[in-house]
Image 1 (cartoon, one colour):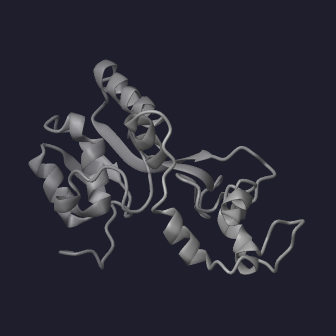
Image 2 (tube, helix red, strand yellow; image 1 turned 90 degrees about the horizontal axis):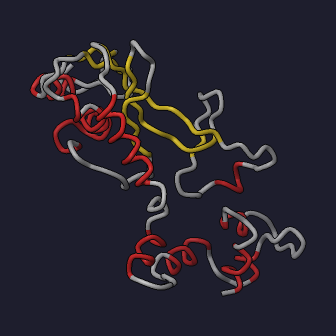
Length: 212
């Protein structure tokens, strides 16, 4: 219980196990309380604080419950009011973390926060996006919720990366548009599945890709 209270001072409670015991910097508490880090988080994963209704409890378990409807409505609005051109581009984008003084160690482990070194602003939320190449308008967004989480439709036929493309383009299946993506998404299976769905594909392909 004492470790849990101390975690309130940090977004990333794992810092409590990073240094020797220090009452000022609030570190080393795991060692002080004889509570190994992995054991603590294993115990915590089975605990839930219930407030109000069962729906409120589900929101506690799902950190994206309050923002997911925003993405759903955004995508629905784009589908109803925008007609993309012949070429549509699939890629990833970032929602950068704006607080300047925040260290990555304070954010590590937070839901939906990633650190991607190759990005100009590489700390923040990550999104998969579908963009119209003519208007440069984002047509569809998918929130990256973490490994083993989020939507899985089409993953069984085109893999994890290919499943993302098939979900992003789902509304335009059968429109005979041309989908463009980089090697992070590309595969032979994806190109074949898009062809079955009435779409064409342009993308760079690595030589170690299956069926190359």
